[in-house]
Image 1 (cartoon, rainbow, N blue to C red):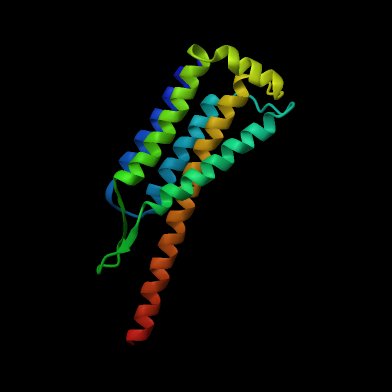
Image 2 (cartoon, one colour):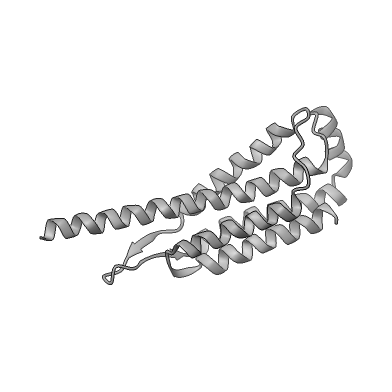
Amino acid sequence: MSQFLAALIASGTILLIILATDLGQRRITIMRMSRSVIAVAVIIAIFVHSFPTQGNDLSLQLVGVGTGLIGGLIAGALLPAHRRESGELYTVGGIGYALVWIVVSAGRVIFAYGAEHWFAEGLVRFSIDYRISGADTYANAFVFMSLAMVLARTAVLVTKMRKLKAAAQSHLAVSR
């Protein structure tokens, strides 16, 4: 399978699950948060065939993780959480939230396409100059970026959920 096709399938799958799960008003549930983490775990099982550690391979993969963490924190910040009077917790995913995921997903796909069609020679030169062993390293960096982004977004949701529950409990304690 080509790097472009793999990126398209992986990024498209994650994007669809995230947008279907988070756009609009959605209840915060463990299943909702777990669904996207499970999807990324499946993507890793399908698309990560090796874990290159030669030269700067590990550094590039860590850059993917760091980029994903930042993206996930930004996305999480754009997903406000609220508590209804019934006690249900929910988020409101809007256009800003969707755009973060769309831009990041599109960037991965465009890079993969460009690596095969537009700048393959330059990428080979870059890989030699910076001691990156090959396509698996780039693919892993993008998959790990997806995982880190989903995990960071999930961590933000868990934090918001805990804060809302704590605020509700303190409000109950004060009103007694």
